[in-house]
Length: 158
Image (tube, rainbow, N blue to C red):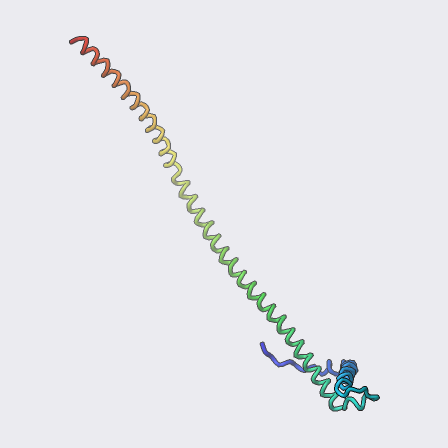
């Protein structure tokens, strides 16, 4: 994303007077610090060619700064766009999985409905088997009692 910053001549022309005043004040302060003594006129401090170069340099640096800020914002928006696309993909995948689960569940419910009469029959058979087991247990108990009685009668008869 390292693009060269476009030149904005309208911007340079409209803000050159305020930038010139600001730049000349900064340059004057720098000149005072370098020479150690204040000078009486601004012509002694700044040459016109140096002022133009400073203004152009300032506008170039500001343009580069703003371009970098815009590029950073653009990068943020591109990242958000990628995140949104990935999130959208995940939701589409989840939607497909959910639809598959719904279809599968409907199939299972249909099979259960088809098996339901057989399951009811199994429950009835189970109940019958349970009652037969009880009857067999009672019959076994009764037959043991009869055997005991028969043995008693045999002992008495013998």
